[in-house]
Image (cartoon, rainbow over all chains, first blue to last red; front, side):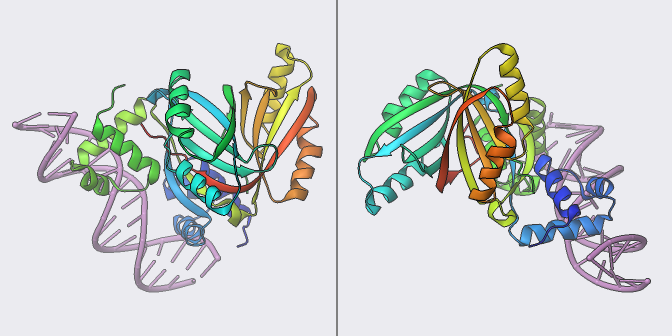
Length: 152
Length: 152
DNA sequence: GCTGAAAATCACATTCC
DNA sequence: GGAATGTGATTTTCAGC
C-alpha cells in the first residue's frame, strides 16, 4: 500500500488518540468527514491498523515493577523451542517475548507489582517451564520513553 | 482506586478492543449501558485508562526490523544523563528507552525498515548523541509475544 | 451505584460532483 | 477521488430508585 502525506498524518493522529471523531480529524487534516472515514476504512481493511486499544497507566493498577529477562534454552530442538514459546506466551506477566540474536536466546518484558512479586514470578512461573538453561534479569530503574506510535 | 471484578473485566475488554460500543460491553458485562459508561468515565478520570490508541501492523508500513540496543554512557553526571535522555526521546525509531540495572545503563527498543536502515540509524542518529560510551545490539529474529494489555 | 428514557452527537450509506 | 445530505446508532445527560 502507498501512503500519501495525509495518510501518514492520519496514522500519526490515530496512534496518538483513536477516540477523536472524524470531524475533529477532518479539521486537522483539512478534509471532509467522508474523506477521513474512507481513508480510515482503507487503512483498516488493508491491515495497516490492526487494532484499537485502551492503554493503562500501570502504576494505577499496582504493576510498577518492570524487568527484562534474558533466557537461554538447554537445547534448541524444534520441539523444545515450540513448547517454550507456547508456554511463555500464556504468562500474563510477560507482555513481550522476542527470539533474539546474541548470547541469549530470548528477551522478555515482564511487569509485576514489586521485587517480591518478581521473585515469585521467576520461581513459580518462569522457571517452571522446562528446557530453560540460564536466565539473566535487568530491572527497569526509570522509563525514559515509551510509545506505541510508529512513525510512517 | 479499588477495582471489583466488573472493573477488571471491563479493563481487559477495553485493552483488547476499545472501539466496542457501550451496548456491546453492557451485554458482555451484564450491565446497563449507563453503568458501563459511568465505570469507563471513572477509570478515565482516575487516570487508570491513560489513552486510546490505534495499533499499527509494522510490516505493512515497512518497519519489519526490530532491535534492542544496550547503551553505556561515558560519564554519569546529571547533566550528561539528562541530555542523553532528552535527545534519545526525540528519535522516532526509538519506541522505548529504559534506564536499567546491570552491565549497561540503557536498553532501547528500535524499529526500522531493515539492516541497512539500522546501520544508518546507528551512525546518523544514535551515535551522534554525545556521551555514549559503548553500545551492544541484539536483533529480533522472531516476535513470540507482543501485547499492550496488562492483567489487572 | 444502577436503570431507563430523552437529547445531542456521530457514524455510515447514498447520492452527486 | 472527494463533498453534501439524511437516517439510524451511539454517546451523554438526567430523573428516579
